[in-house]
Length: 156
Image (cartoon, rainbow, N blue to C red; front, side):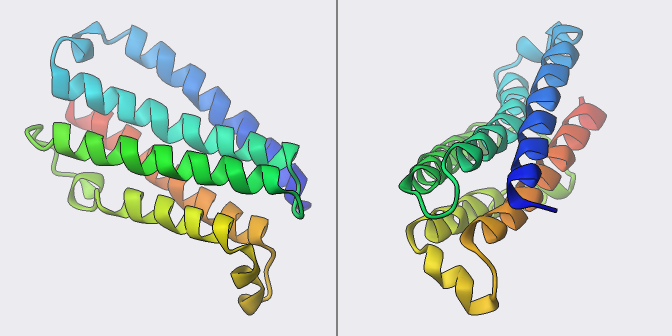
């Protein structure tokens, strides 16, 4: 698959999931009553929105331009900041799924995204382009977002 096609499909899919999540939250107003639950619902939203924006940035600024690097750095910083705050504010929630036990993975993955955006040539060591490595990281972030959505909905 062409890398620009990958990012186009990823952006469209993630924006679709953002819209679907809005519909789910709209039908569960009780989630907005409790602050921790509201934050966790927002965490699912951000887990799809940030990869969607990163995918759009990769399309706008193809490999070799600084645009995608800046988009991935800003998205990575936002991801670290948001997920770190989410972890702090939802510790009181009694979620026991795989996401809850491995919350630390999200800020770490966003940190790796930032690393490859700052040092894209490092990807060449394993024979990949930087946007390919970032695409693999994006796949992991989206998988975790799906796990978060499932865990949140099955525990609420």
